[in-house]
Length: 436
Image 1 (spheres, rainbow, N blue to C red):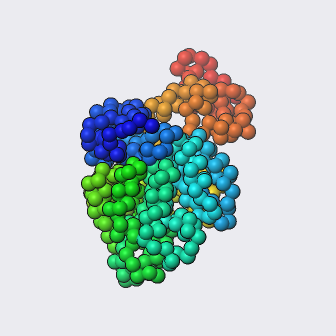
Image 2: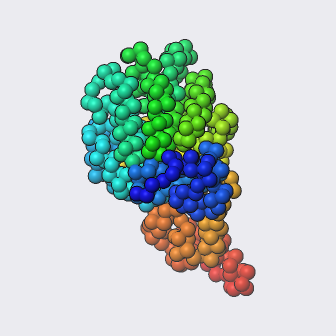
Image 3: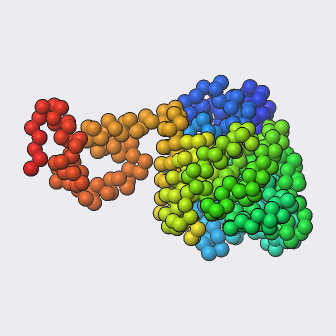
C-alpha cells in the first residue's frame, strides 16, 4: 500500500486532498470532487473507509447524497451458522445494501469479521461492546475499561469501517432512567450492557471516559464513529423524552471533539417515533450535532405490527430521510421476534430501499427520479422487459406476472382488454379498441 499523507478522509478533505474514495463517491453521486470536499471537511458527509479494508467500494453518507441503507447480520447462540450469515451478506450486497453490520454475539467472531473485510465490498460496521464479553469469555462485571478499549482497537485492526459506540450514556443516565420511569427503559442491546456494567462496577462509561483514546485509535485506522443512541425509544410512549434528548446533547458535544481530531462521525437515532414527531427529531439532531449524518433505526411508527415491522420502519424511514436522515438501518419482518432468515433479509432490504429512494425523489437528489421516469415510459409502451430493467426487484415482479399470466401479452390479468394504457395507446393512434 502506498504511503498517504493524511490519516482520515476528513483530514484529507481539510487539506484539500482528493482521495480515491472521494473520487469514487463523487462519481456515484453525480458531483464534482470540488463539491464533495467541503462536505467531508465539515463533517456533513462521511466516507467510512478503514485503510485496511482494501476491497471496499466506498460510499458517502450525508443528507444531500443518496440515502444509504445498512443491513444488520450476525450469529447468536440460537442461530450460529456463519455460512448462512455469509449467504445473507452476499444477498444483501446484490440487492443494494451499502453497509453490513456484524452484530454477532456468539462464538469466535473474529474470523467472520475478517472474512467480511477481506471479501465484502460494502461498508462494514460492528458494535465492539457486544464482542467484549465473547472475546474475553468472562462475565460482564469482571471486564475493565481497558478491556473494552482494546476490543475497539481489535475491530479497527480487523478492518471495520465504522463502529457503534454508546458513548453518550453516563452515570447521570442511571439516575434519569430511574427518575423518569420509561415504559420500555433501555432497549439498545449495547446501551443496556454499558448501563449494566456501570451499575455493577460503579464506574463511568469507559467509551465516554476514554473517548480521546478511542479517537486516537479511529484516527490511526480511519474508522468512522457511529455514536450509538443507548436511550433510543423502544415504544411510542418513550419517544422524544428527556433521556433521549439529553443523550443527544452529549452526542453533539462528542461530535465536536471527534472533529477536532479529524475523526468522522455519524449519530444514531430512534427508534419508535410517531409520524408527527419524526421531522422534529431530525431537525433537533441536525441542530445539536451540527449537520453530522443521522443514522436511524426505522423509525417505527407504530408498536403493534410484529411480523410487519419492515413496513412500519419503511414508513418512518421515508419521512426521516425526507427530513434529513442520511442512513437507514433496515428492519425485517423478524424484528422483535427472531434472528432474520434469508427471506426476512430480502424483505427488509427492499422495504428500506423503497423508503430511501422515495425520500431521495422528495429531496431532489441528483438523478434520483430518472429510473422512475424510465419506468413510466416502459409502462406506457407496455414494454415488459423494460419494466423489469427498471424494477427494484425484477425477479419478484416477473414471478407474479408469470403466475397469473394474461390472455393477451400486452395486458395484465387484472384489467385484460380493459387496460387503460392499452386503450389510450390505441385511441391516440386511431386504432380500433376491442374490449369484448
